[in-house]
Length: 419
Image 1: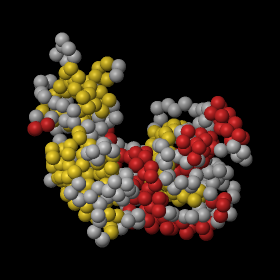
Image 2: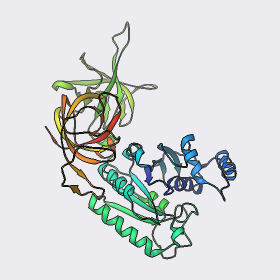
Image 3: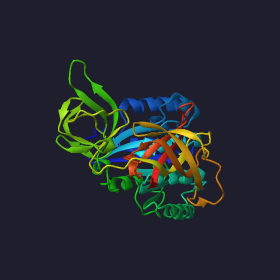
Image 4: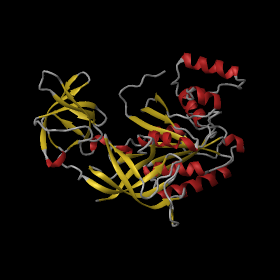
């Protein structure tokens, strides 16, 4: 297995309906890029034989949970790492079943590319449309449609062309900028890593060739304005030490920089403590402890930011993706978890829902239920430094939490109207 070094890294996510072959596809990708350890491969060979599988059941390289192995489906987000000569990859294999949409949102939220798997026999289905809607909401600009099991329709070019046209029309309507449609057989290996000899009519790239050529976004979180939600305050007994621990969610900060604090205050960063001691700079994704010059009273949930600070608001519009059967109705009291803050909020209005083709439904919505995508207005009890959602979740993403149970009801994305 090739070691992943400091190469350019692409984060991708696979999604699709149950039985469309996502796990087999990921297993094929790992196997054919020689990213599987010898003992793992031996284990898969034994298990495949025990189950009477003709050849290797490559889905076993991904389906690691006991429950999903017994049912033959993926229920958790399975992360895998592999590399080629061109770049390194971090891959999230997301679940296909409707009830696990929340896991799919999680897997997509940090991805730069989404690979959607569909069964060539059935074409674009409801779950395909749902996943494409979520990808569009998350600002993912590169989507690959892998038309799997093309061998089961005799490698039909006509069937492939119809599916590709339907998908590209839908993607264009949703505003997804870059799409590629590839006919594949994950089971046989056609057009995943190696070019197929069964489809001479297809002259486009393999899936791996697409992944190796997609530009890695330079609009990364570390290029945004600095954001640091405080997770907890560190004080040492018999010492004047006071540090603010958390994770840099966007931008970067260096010792000596001026930063903004709540209530219009400013201070200077005098120290940054990392896991192995002091550092001069912290970037997006780094978990550090900041020390500032002034003795101010900050607490969990407060935001340390660049001098270009988001205004604290109590009312904003948002898009919600429903994650449970419990409906979020107008007037409902909920908790909003934004960064490390948890505040009470009221759902002022559910203005409209989207159907799975991305078209607004003109009927009056009763609320936001499981897998619904809806536009809402929220009023918070305490001000939040909310700002418009930025792709890959650097800022503007939040969760709606049930007050009574603490369960997550919806994933949210802050819209443009902030008040």
